Image (cartoon, rainbow, N blue to C red; front, side, top):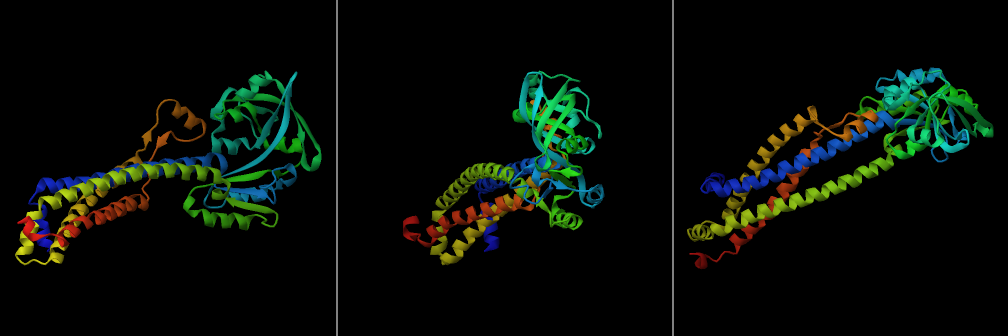
Length: 402
């Protein structure tokens, strides 16, 4: 039956090539589309974690539910240094985030104040690249960096002194004067209009909390080793008073956005699969109807209907397998090429990506599921399409076809 099926395929080369092409294009285009969709999101999430939120966050007990200064945490320099020495950790960025009223002359506005380690933040989020005027902060600087929008609102320039008034630790008053060292161009309008950065020692002095932090952001080198890194972090800190969160908890909103976008991609893939399925079914119907007289002749000569149905199914299976193998070979080559040589973005998107410390590239994903899912789906569609010729053969009226 295998030999007969193979010979039958090549009796009509055009028909065979049409069937193979239907399978080939279905698997190839779905694989490439899924690879780019997954690759772009994987890169976006990886860049966001590395440059902004971190793969792991450490906070004081209760801070995540109530982000007030009373729930800030303390951590000594020895523990911070120990965290930096953990094998898979790439960057440890301590933060002190609070709110204050910023005032200059007759203008004032409520803003978010972020105390940072300038050295760590430069390595983490590439903050110096966003400077449009002035200079970057040093580790012991008592100056401030503000967004362009905030500077325009308060009519503040370089070397002007900004007054900050807010609430310190355990209800004490927080007040300080900070000369403007630089103006930043932040991508989000909310940040540009209401965000300021100061050095950590100045922020700790402002709220009267030495060694105080709102949280510690940790970026890892290999996300696949995240669980063991979290265990190492928990061993290094006091979990009785501190919480350690993985990025899937802290970045739940981004994950939901990713899932929504991937759901849209799945709709597009569904349409592609639908087109491919009807293409395969149309080819099978054409194949069956063209051969009704031949099929009737073989049954009349004594070939069992079940063996004939099996032979036709084998023909379809061989053509499908050939199309799948060719699509996989080309799909693997294309996706791996663009994984190593990502598509470079152009225009305004380049500056946007660079400002956030991200490479302006669109890579592909080479995860195993990228190749397995289209193949399995097309094989299922082919199996469903095979029902048509089998049914026709089993119900074929020989005298009508001869």
